[in-house]
Image (cartoon, rainbow, N blue to C red; front, top):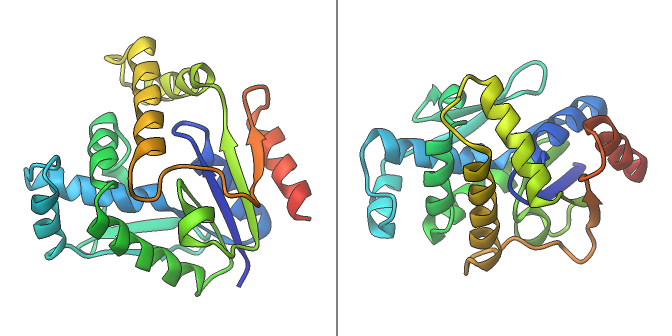
Amino acid sequence: MISVAIDGTSGSGKSTVAKILAKKLGFVHLNTGELYRAVAYKAFITKVDYTKENEVNDLLKNTNISVRFDAEGEQITLLDGEAVGQYLHNETISNISAYVSQYLNVRQSVRELQRKMANSYDIVMEGRDIGTEILPNATYKFFLTASPEVRAHRRFIQLQESGDNSITFDSVLADIKSRDERDMTRKLSPLKKADDAIMVDSSDMNLDEVVEYILEKIE
């Protein structure tokens, strides 16, 4: 199996790049963030206090997260057998996910699923610790980032296009910087570039340029 690991900072476009890249390569794409978001969503709908690790651990005992891929290789994230992808991409779930993804039992549960997928498919997998922790022997590794201001602008536009007009640019920028700090300083699997990963700074690159750059390195 061939694996492409794409790590990077929050809002750097990892998911979009990985999705396009997988289609061009004919691979499946695993958005690992959705797996953590699924746990976050379960905590949200069951009103579990996600700031308390023991409560999230108890929640996990009765939680089943799985993944299947459609005919186009698109990921379908299942929570207790139900497809929940449409509920996972908002600021509330993002903020809860930032908490639960720090917990050991959550990370171990998600890690097992990630490795199972990598052993079963030619795959493009993106997240924050793929090249360092999940797939240290990935065939190809990339680390995608951009300046906080550029990432915040992209995220702000995305939220506005989705109809969310309650968010300000300054609040998005503050959230991006906060996520960076949490991701890079957490005890378990902190965000960092793998020694053998190729750095891709997309601050001055558009989406097509990023994808083509990565494809060139792979080919």
